[in-house]
Image 1 (cartoon, one colour):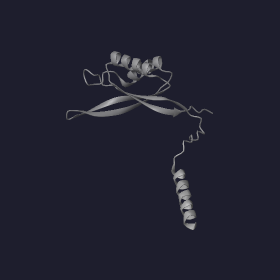
Image 2 (cartoon, helix red, strand yellow; image 1 turned 60 degrees about the vertical axis):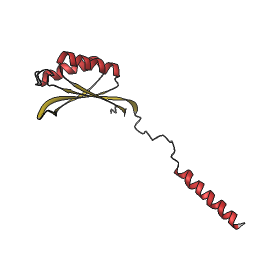
Image 3 (cartoon, helix red, strand yellow; image 1 turned 45 degrees about the vertical axis):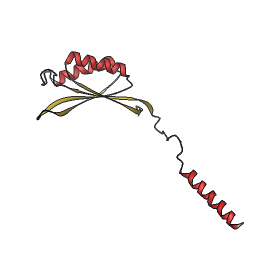
Image 4 (cartoon, helix red, strand yellow; image 1 turned 180 degrees about the vertical axis):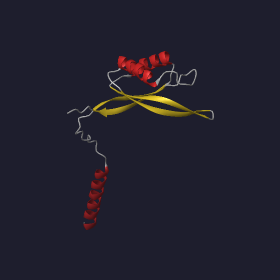
Length: 138
């Protein structure tokens, strides 16, 4: 009888331990009230594709690209950086416009990139990631 009680207790403790190890599907706390959307990042190199050199002044390019962006999306954060890459053994230095966009869709981004490629003859690297966001204002 004691042996049977001992086995039942061991079995009960084993089951309780295993149940405690099973991950739960509890929703994470979202105290910020974040919304889900896609985040697009466009890296627009200002070197002309045909010549490999920057033809347009950076400030002029910013104004042109800013207006193209705002014709396709509702808002953008745009910063200027330098990109570097190899062509053979040569290191190329390129002014790059970094554009972060929330609340757009693939169709508007594709139309925007197509317009930038055609009108400015520059390359655009596009990335898309799922994101949670909320604009918090006072």
